[in-house]
Length: 619
Image (cartoon, rainbow, N blue to C red):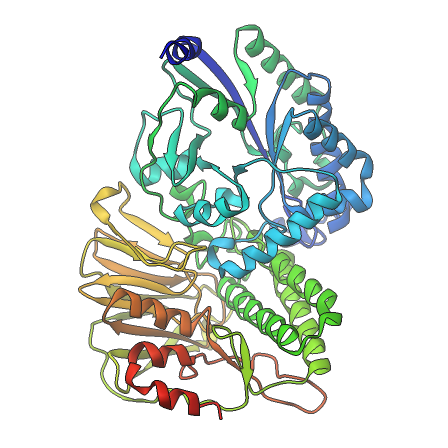
């Protein structure tokens, strides 16, 4: 008891100064060549750096000078977050900078945060992609002689309940929740210094805290801005270190230290205060990013027009669906390698994984994507597909691969559909398109299929195009699968302060209430699902001028568990069909149309009496 009282008195009036520098070597994926002409209609070729030149500037002009500040001040601690790809580039091209980072990490002055290989939009993709990313990251970090901290932070501040549950198995236990997301979800102004969540802790990043334990955030932003006077890599050759910015930072931190503020790492702060502070449970987190009020949460990356929308033909849906399908194809290659014992192809598979993870970078669909960034993702996905085809050429292409059962087979009978009216109302609004719909029902189950085909209006071919599909929300709920989880959660919408929110729906599933669920078929549509409590609707909107062929949605009525099984069967654990072609092991996109190719476990879910018949399906 005396020890507890002593600890409590010790931390009364304590003030911690925390900093988190978020670096992204894929800040401008693909480079800046042609950027100023495309966006501003001015010729500045001398400023338009290629990708390697931008990477060099990020490392030498913004990252290394920051390390030098902390090397010169051993009493200061901080957190630096970056992707494994950046470590890989430093190891190969800038070993002297990597050595400085290693020195700071070894003397426990800097906590290295790194949970993904690429700065990918992981909230939108299957958990297997994140597992690949973590494994690749671990190997890069180990080979570089580094170690990571138990702190969790990621590109665009992506977070959610599923993230900590997923990462706690890897030793992570401190989740940094961006203040912007926290306030968007719960409108909480009186933030606590620390919260509990699962078996770990939550810290609200970027929000100062007053009280017995004071927290002051001296930096919580893109690390590239810290010592460049606010310039970012889009400035080209003008993106460079600023002595004035460096001097200002050093002066500020010295003043805070002289005033008694402990310039600390997040993990040190958590370790010290938990000896005397019992945190309350963190209010429930919905999957989101660090500026949801500006981006409609996930919508900006998944259908929302970027800041250069009038200058660039964005392709959110094409990028996202192609990446998703390519990810499944890479997983199929992994299954074949395991099934056939072809370990000699493991290095090829690793190449494919890296390419698709790089393709999933958030910048190609995010705040202000421009043509080269969009093409970067599409080309990386193409590279991954090419590698998979090479692998399958060497192994032999089966007719089908079940991602759920992790095996190949040569015959399959899918579920049948028949024409029947969709049982709930919906609306389709288009600008620049005409459309037609096809409504069907799956035989012997309460599931319906809606296909919407779009036909571009040639008169508006170069002008703005947009589509909006709206379904009714029967109850004020948020019912979905958090990213990196395989469960469905249902939250009372009245427990949150927002009126509208865009969700990534990585497996396509969202609840409408009254036992109804909508599943987007990610083979055709991977837009954010926008919950609108004011209008009691769920919307899927694409305003990125993508040339759309069709969207497919499935409506299911029944139990939550069965809805999840159906969503997984359609999307992240589907059956892939391959078509053998002359000169190619499999046809690109031959795994399209996950329905009616519904994997066999679904039949078990809905037709348990047919277990004996199931075995004969693959004879």
